[in-house]
Length: 434
Image (cartoon, rainbow, N blue to C red; front, side, top):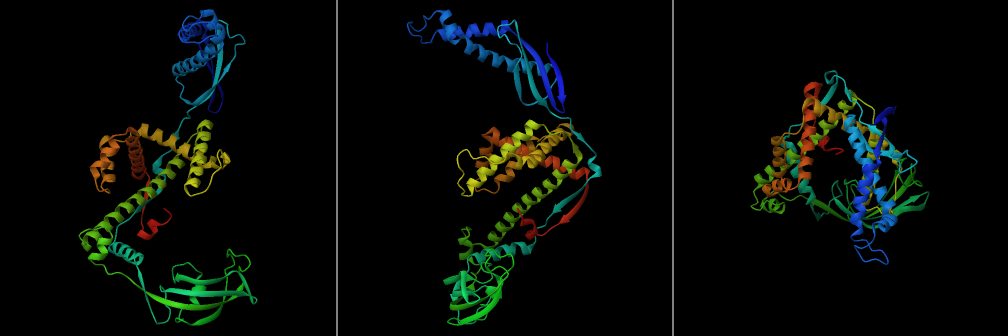
């Protein structure tokens, strides 16, 4: 028999016992199997007396069998008590005599919380909408042209977008300051590489000309010795090159991967790519908005074991991200886990709310939904059928898609039930901060 105590909140303690007869039978069976292969000095393999095997290995085998049966008896007891256990229990042996007829133990653990959700109809949510415009395609085409700009020598005065080669000297109170000198510096004006006031001083100059001007550095400039101060720059302009954009012709189109050089095909490809990326970003924005609604309507206590596990995951992900950016991470380095607890608590809470809503409103991913999403992914690849087959070959890949469909179903449920305000945004805004 077993009993369960409530220790407070989600923490429980299960008290139970294991009959010694169960342990002895398993211990004896294992020792006999061990005796067939054990190597003991003075005996041939398979000929070691059972008593010798028991003396040498009995305590170790008993501990192994006890540990396994603690897990088994706990699971059976938890199931009989209809306990929804979170994580792993902490076991404690209460019996002082491990040879007693009954081995008494306790297991301390947490249970899943009750998730209470309020009426989603009382909540407001913003739904992002987007319609691709003709100008979006043309602007993207212009960006592609600018990326392939050719600069040609010019004799006219410097204008914005020109490429210039300069020497510069900057002085503060007549003395050249740190970082205030440069030789044969090539830059494109308007590209944002230099401060706007510095570039402004170059406008109107001609090749071979020297010019001095004053400017004041921003107060928050990273060079603290000149931040907020007025300095004098002297510029020597060696050359000016004017930008020339490539024509949108067959040669340009072929360079971008459209083999037959058809301009209309390139524009159609740009339109399709923009539509696909815009749709993805709209989905991400709307999902984030819907998840915030779920966090508002869901009330529950977050299990400490899940919180700590998720905080560890976030910490490891952060270290991996830093390594991916080229930072050298010392082996075994750890970050303060408590830094991640707020994010971890939000993610755990959201996961439990999602699970409750999916079960309550039958929002699970349907096979046809999963198939449709995989087909959608596949269309962006040259050989879609290979992508479909790649997903079908691995159950874990299919589960990832199922989780995405499940989230889409939950978002649709929120949007159908909450007070929705539609907000139409333009492509530039949609592409920001993503």
